[in-house]
Length: 240
Image (cartoon, rainbow, N blue to C red):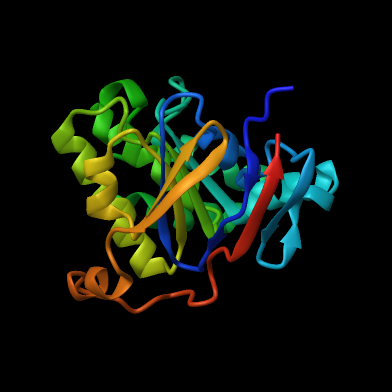
């Protein structure tokens, strides 16, 4: 049996920005999928805000992903036939958010990522960086406490990638949101994340502190958190 994640023990504080690094096949994406409730550990626990995902039913996990987790991927996964307003609204339909509230929340989410002027455009009319901003707005529209990003800059040029990570870091600080990001780019991880977690063969090989919270806060114009209780604090002891 291949153990994609083997004996990992990791605690992530609420509001922390953590980067997972390692070669392909090291277990980064599997660990992210465990945190998302997409995969189940064969042993151990995945505890998020006091809830063990390993013990939750499929229906409970679906509710967790819908209400507590936002996900951003390397591919943007936007529906090309829909406007960006409709793309961002889609998670709220699944969450059964009242129709009257959706329009306001979509506008707020798109304005937060700098696209308030592109509401009726379709994905093909946007640049790659703008499409990734739409995917971030979509991930945030249900107001999750945890943002999971799997190679979010992988399809972008270096300048646009830095813009996207600046946005993610600022949103993490302003919303008090926990961010766990998978990346191959150590230089970017060291610049934006607070801790770097290195994996190899499904195991954590080292954890280093890259950018303390207080240093990030000093460089951010507004550090007031709108939701100070948001985030994830838990442990990973999982085998997959």
